[in-house]
Length: 66
Image (tube, rainbow, N blue to C red; front, top):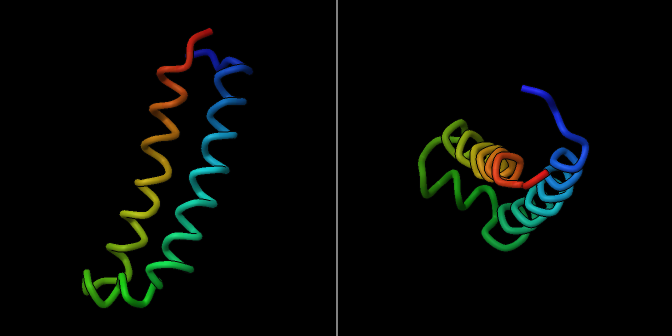
């Protein structure tokens, strides 16, 4: 699979914006400790937050046209 500059540019831009939004949401609004108390596991919350960043970024890369 050959990497394309335009696809990477849009994916990185999406990644930065989405990551900043999730950090604001998890740390500022919902409080990370509240999330860990609700789900009961620090590792589970971390994995879910990472997947919420990585999977949409891969989708943007996949669906961006040349």
